[in-house]
Length: 206
Image (cartoon, rainbow, N blue to C red; front, side, top):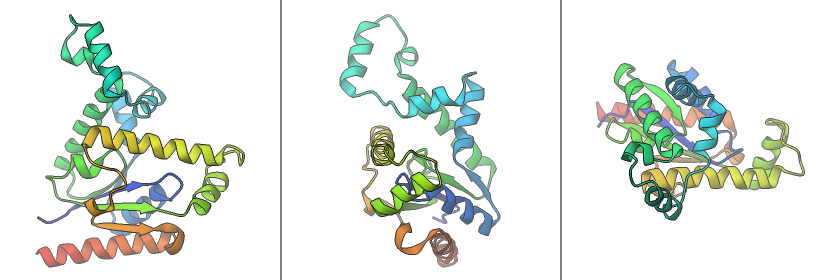
């Protein structure tokens, strides 16, 4: 299947968002990341921060079971945790974009799983702990004293959200078409390699 969409999963502080934007610019296509969250927030009349918090707080199956058993008269939709509702809504938005746009770049949001049947070129960006901490402090404005815990917590949230919603392992590199170390290569080279690999793959598939 021709892979027309690029999806990027990334460790916190690895520069995945920056690289994704560079890839989109080089290909002349749209870039999506937080915009998906903003669209979902408008649809359900909530602020993006509330939904972002829900993304980061995926309930365990035990807590979910307790919640359902405590509310037996509620509908299945009502019983769903907000994190599940966010995932469902974002999935619908992403699939809708895929039905309207021939090609685009999507960072995060379990994109490779949601668009698995649409033909996507999946990428995983990782980096060294040292470089991730440096980017968190220099680029994201994180307090140096809190940088290490921030990086660790962010990765855990992303991993949990991905694993729970996809049934796959976020850091299992075998599931991605391309894995790149941004600490070794730099953002620009990573973006160029993604573009070249994406274009080469589609040339072979023609």
